[in-house]
Length: 253
Image 1 (cartoon, rainbow, N blue to C red):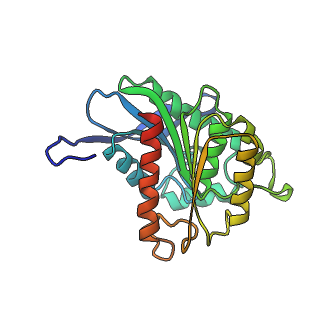
Image 2 (image 1 turned 45 degrees about the vertical axis):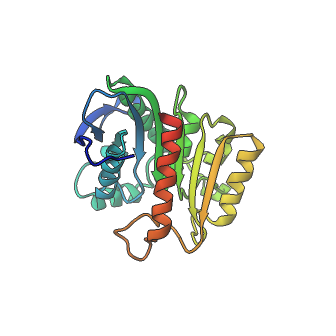
């Protein structure tokens, strides 16, 4: 709990990390100043790209005592505004799941290698980043200590949704999930729908996984996004943020 007389300071900067297949990619690092030890979080950006909202989210976690790395999953597509880069990536069918898992694994290794790390690292993402967080938590060996999925569409996929870049639904890797899962969902969302969230929950129960799901009435997709007035729901977002902090503090301290 924050006290008004305590010293607060963070460092935030762009760094270079090793990603999938040893590629060097950019990442955004935010952490409290000091020697630590600090719990870590890998922050997986959403489909709109490696944008300002995710840098703000990284600094928010740093203010709460976490060391955060957010890898640029679109780094190989070149540079420009986040919107322009994301449009190029979408025109090429998105990024491949195995490449994302490799980049997220690289961010995990980077955090664990730092002298200020306490050795525990979680992963979180929103929208497509939520899907990718669940995927990475299932595939990355010697992996994460906790995962949070915020309205991640595409965890449940039909056969028509599969392709060369997304060959297996994350749902089908549930048996391999290696850490506790937090899920936050709006009941007015269409991706994932409440029915898809039910499917995900049933699969977690089937494999006796540790999880907690929270579903919000009056909220749809992206209800944390204060910069999107049509999506933002202040009451639900405030409650959701507290659940995220409580979850990571419980599993990463």
